[in-house]
Each structure stands twice: as C-alpha cells, then as structure tokens.
Image (cartoon, rainbow, N blue to C red):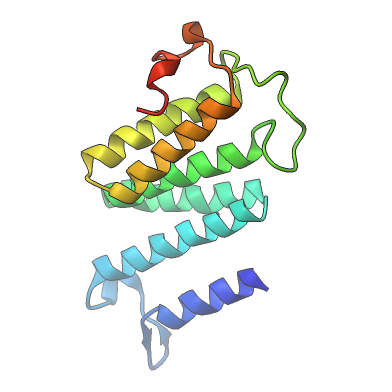
Amino acid sequence: GALAALHRYFDHVQARGPQGPIPLSEQPCAQAARARTTSSLLSLSALHTRFGHTQEAMVALSEALRAGQQHNDQWCLLHALAGLCAVLANSAPGAPGLPPDELGNVKHGSQHVQLLRLLRRCLERGQELYCPHITAYAKLCLAQFALQHTVEPTDMDASPMHLAA
C-alpha cells in the first residue's frame, strides 16, 4: 500500500553505488543526503499521522528531530515541530474518529493546551525563519483551534483574542 510506495520512492532517490547504498559520510554531498533522510522521516511521520498511527509517527518524528538537532538543521526542526502539532491535533480528544471533548473547554495541562502552545511556537519559528507555508499552516490550525475550543485565559500564555494572530 501507501507505506510500501513511500519506501520504494525514497529507496529510488537514495544515492546508490555499484555495491548498494553509499554511507552518508562518503557521499559527494553529505548535506543533500541528510536532507533526503530527514525528508523521508518527516514524510513517513506524515503518512503515519494521516493513518492514525500515532506511535509510529512519533518514532519517525523523534528520528527526524535527532538528525535536525545533530546537524543544527533549523528547517528540519521547524517541519518536525509542525509534524508534532499534526500528531497532537489528530490524537487529542475530539479529533475525527476519537471521543468528543467535554464541552470543548481547554483545561490547564491538557493535550489541547500543549497543542495550543506548540502551534504558537510553530507560528513564531515559521515567521523567524521566513517559512511562509509553515506560518500559514500554524495560523490555519490556530484559527481551527479557536473555532473548536473555548479557551480560558488563565490557562493560556496569551488571551483568546490572539489565537489566530
């Protein structure tokens, strides 16, 4: 299915030598190879998120985060943050296919509060790194969050008025 096709795609684009894959450290452009690897991990996470496989998505995100941190790849870290927001949004109570949240109220310490904080951080970092598609994603998710949940200002870092800012 879809997972096998994703694996075949990244196997196809991976640099190959006469004896098989070339180790990252020996490739002509190690940075491009790292980018392909992190891209494949982020894509794998997105696939698992889409299918509702939260644990598998988190494993792929963790690997992408390690690679991004190891090489100080800010773009990888930003995309992993957006991926984490997607995983949380799809696994929080009230998400499609999950039991509804109680009256849509956001309670201090809940998964929704974590999601809100991560979305705000994603928006900030997207703006700092001039990444318009991540900035737009975060704004859209924040607007959707504001429509679906009642936010108590005492539990939040900012007032509800600034959710979609």
